Image (cartoon, rainbow, N blue to C red):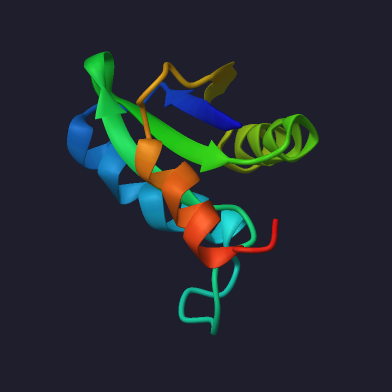
Length: 101
């Protein structure tokens, strides 16, 4: 299932964009690893300088990731199911990288 982890409270879009790498390392600790990420992920910006982390994960994985982002960043974090079609590439990425799943 695809989820959105919305991270709010940045002063500007540039500040939100600068937070991408440390947040990405929470989802994928090794940037240049071999093979696929266990949890496919990607970022976008939303209105009001919020950073949105899209993840394709189980409900338990999504909750754990959102909690870790909240603890690590100190920002307001909300977890919701992604709207149909949002981050659609993550589901496709998972299917391609995990053909037997």
